Length: 150
Image (tube, rainbow, N blue to C red; front, side, top):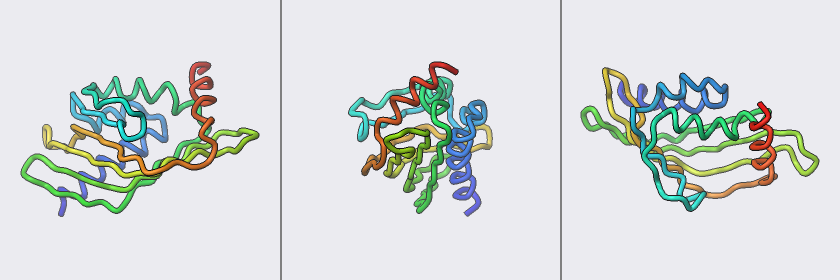
């Protein structure tokens, strides 16, 4: 049970620290190489990247929002020795003042693969399973422009 709690905490820390823009702590939750897959939402294939690559990409948009809030839950986690798989629901709410609506919400689930490295669980693969989005979908364009100015 302790492994499952530590695994879920690793995933939670990654999301909480991304909302807080604490990029060093975000990167610390990942293994040196990570398979990142947002194909269900973007249509782009999965890529193998470094933790720094991940946060470099997120920095081009997330700081452009006034607030982001990632809420995860309904974890189903299986541990097999020093490897694990964890599935969870995810809701990402993005807030930015705009005349056409202040909120853009993305709903889906995640599949994570993790490995115990030097005694700590680290994310080796992250797949987002897109379900739907709601609200002002144009906010992302405004956030990208805002992030360029920071």
